[in-house]
Image 1 (spheres, rainbow, N blue to C red):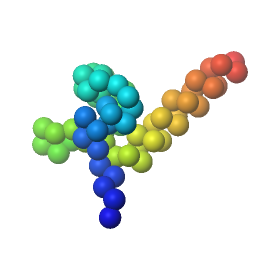
Image 2 (cartoon, one colour):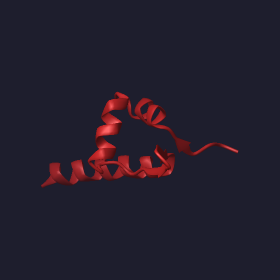
Image 3 (cartoon, rainbow, N blue to C red):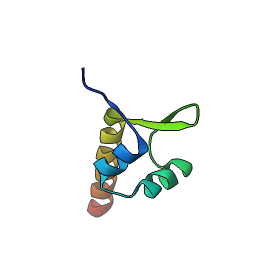
Length: 64
């Protein structure tokens, strides 16, 4: 069974950003996440959907 839950560091690696960027995005509610007690997690499905939404927003803005 594949694991679909990502940690902050795994999400940072997946997106190619520093883990501090992920913490900032979580704090500002810019990226889908969930917490288990004080730990922050992400699902790969939600991150992929979020990436797709970001791409769609950019394309929509570019088209006008």
